[in-house]
Length: 146
Image (cartoon, rainbow, N blue to C red):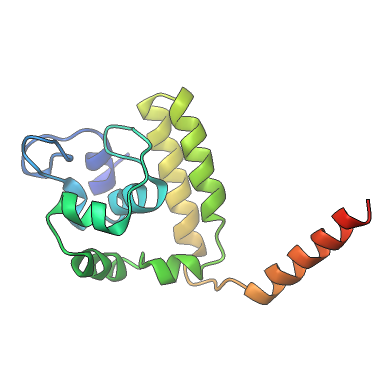
């Protein structure tokens, strides 16, 4: 991987180093890929899968929740934007959780990068909530008829 996202997940050291307990540094501060991985996929720079809420992430970045949401918004990653994007985030979150149990850090990096690129391609494509509700109703009707 190249660019800032690659640096974050490659385990850079120094001022751009990933979060560490001792230094309280976290390189995702202005890295949309890193923020996406950490906030949405629950994937830490060390390759651990551990979901955190906005308060926990903001605290680790030494930010307020408002700061975190502002940065996410600047990168097109605000929770409202992501929720309303036609993208199966829950499925990818589950995939990462399962993969974190068996894949190497390099494999997780590649998987996360692919998910991020898929999300970026879908950005701006609004989710059709009414269609999803109708599909769910249809599935319920079918399952009750068996």
